[in-house]
Amino acid sequence: MFIFEWLNSQLLKMEWLSNLVKTLVEQVFGLTIQDRLGGSIHFFIYDVIKIFILLSVLIFAISYIQSFFSPERTRKILGRFNGITANILAALLGTVTPFCSCSSIPLFIGFTSAGLPIGVTFSFLISSPLVDLASVLLLASIFNWKIAIAYVIVGLILAVLGGTVISKAKMEEYVESFVYGNQMTDLEEELTTRARLEFAKSQVVDIVKRVWLYILIGVGIGASIHNWIPDNIIGAVLGQDKWYSVLLATVVGIPMYADIFGTLPIAEALVLKGVGIGTALAFMMAVTALSLPSVILLKKVVKTKLLALFVGVVSVGILIIGYTFNVFGYMLW
Image (cartoon, rainbow, N blue to C red; front, top):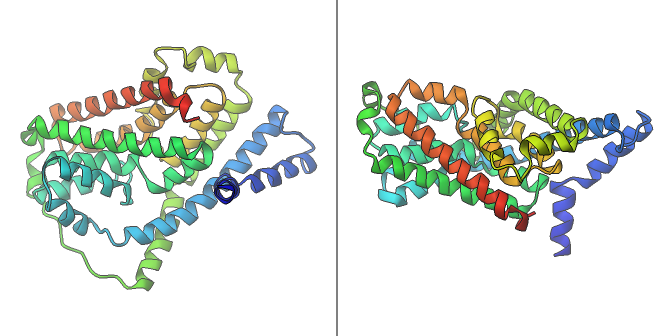
C-alpha cells in the first residue's frame, strides 16, 4: 500500500515537481504560493510541465497498443457482434482508439458504409473522445483513482446507452444517402515492432502539436480561477448547492472545442474552489463529446432528426451523471 501511494504521489501527482516549482517561485520570483501571483505562477508552471510529461509518456505507451487497432481491424471486430454486446464492445474499443470528436466522424462514415448498425457506431462515436486511457491517468493525477475509475464507468455507460437508444429508434433513414455508398478501403497490414514504435512516436508529436495550445489556455484559465476569482463568486454561480450548476456547466461546455487535456486544469481549479465534482465532469464531458465543431461535422452526414436525438441523449446523460456525482461524489473525494 505504501509503495502504491508513493508511486501515485511521485509519478502521477508529481509532488517532487510541485516542490521544485515552489522553490523556483520563491527563490527566482521572490514570491510565495500563498500570494495570488505566486500561486498562479506555481499552478501554471507545475500543471503545464506535469501534463506534458504525463501526456507524452502515456500517449507513447497507449499508441503502441493502438497500433494493433487500425480502423479496418476495429470495424472487423465490431462486425462480429450484434445487439447490446456490440454497443459495449464499441464503447470499449473507443477507449483505446486515438480519435477526437472531430476525427471520429470519418470513422462514422466508414463504419456505417461497411454495414455496422448506426447504434453501434454511435457508441463508438461517444466513447472515443470521451473516455481516453491517457485522460484517465491524468484524472487520477489531478483528483484520485476513485474519481478516474468512476469517470470511465459512467462514460462507458453513457456510450452504451446512447448507442442503444439510437439503435432502438430505427434512425437509419436519417443518415445521408452518400454515407452508405462510401466504402472503407482495407488498409490493414501487419506492422513490425519498429514501425509500431515509430507510429507511437509520431502520435506523441501529432497529439502534442494538436493540444498544446488548448493545454496552455486551459491551465491559464485554471490558474486564474484558482487564484484570482473569489470563492464566493464561484460559489454563487456554480456552487454545489445551486440546482442549475450542472445544467449551466453543460450549456457552457457545448460551444467550446478543446481536447480533454485542456479542460482538466479548468475542472481541477473549479473543484478546488468548491464546485461540485459532478459540475466539473459535466463541463468536461460536454466539451469533449458535444463540441460545436464535431456537431457541425456530424450534421454533414446525418439529418437533423438523428442529430437532435444524438445531442439530446448525450446531453441528458451528461446531466444525469453530473447531478449524480454532485450528490454522491463526496464519497469518492
